[in-house]
Image 1: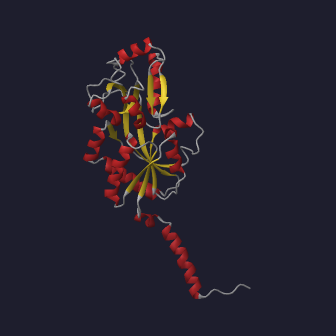
Image 2: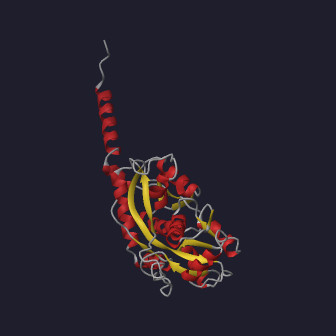
Image 3: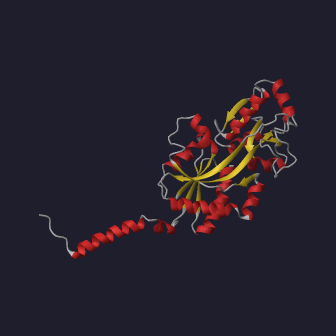
Length: 302
């Protein structure tokens, strides 16, 4: 026969159950965050996603009172960073600032170690951007039309760099090759910043790049910008035509960067992160910095 529990033991059990209920309740999660937050970026330092992560992380730190550490996990067209987020504890202390290539394009190209739908709790799209077509200064082409003529006169001789196979810059270049009927060789890198030295050195001919990375180089005359991939011109360089305006109507390649948490992150934490993201992206100083990068804040619903 089991021994009878004393009144003290019974109250102890009840108190333990009550503690479990409280700590697992939404009310207990209102204390989040209680320690630094890690924001994983699937692209290298100096990439547009990295810059956006640092700007957003600074606003998070000011609003939440805890530092945000950016963790660059570059490689495999963003898959390494995405996998790191997918397998992290769902407690709100590991987030991912991931480009759409990791979640939309790569599932069609690779056997992934994560499920882009089931393994994440979306928070918000953060920014949207177009890409800029730039060439090395020694390339004689001064326009898209002249670049196409040059490439057709030298089949297979010109090269284009990308952020890796399946990345948005790669997709933009392949679409351009298709609509213009060009034979240009692909040279993949582990992120756009890693391709810049070879582009500046003339070891590759051209690249489609996020505007924020090549805009300063174009303004300084170190690279020549020929066009942007959006349907409307960039406010950061309004004199630059679109590819659609340059003889290829309807040509458009745009990208976005989104904030995600691991699946099963409590809804109260996701909601708090969403609120802070929308608030941060509405701040005039952050919007101005993003515009100077050639991108714009979004801040939509999970």
